[in-house]
Length: 149
View 1 (cartoon, helix red, strand yellow):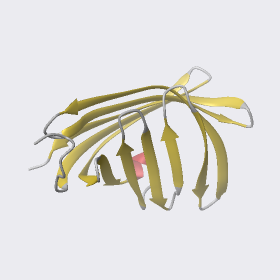
View 2: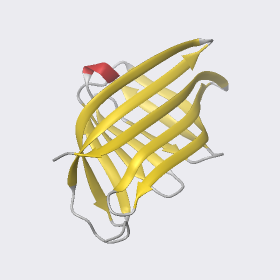
View 3: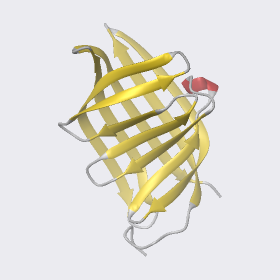
């Protein structure tokens, strides 16, 4: 069976590591959570619940992984749709209980490690968030995927 064949949803462990750098100060967040790897046609998606650690408790996150593009969709207490494509810029709006935050996302790098049988094993995103034309944070996000038995 290869990645292109229809596959059933499967439970996975996800380790999510995010780093944000602002004016020389780096903040790192790391958490491990249960999630599911589901397939929308030929596109694998990782679904998981955000936690207090990420500051987005009450939010469901879906990460859609295509060969050259990654989308992060959040629904719940935080609502947003961010698209990452190397060398591209996208506009996004974070909708929070305190209001909306418009931002621009400039993707510097995407790396995806694949397994022909299991699907995505590791996703790395390197991007810059800007607001009102000024760089706000330089960010990385790494998602490690392991089968949950």
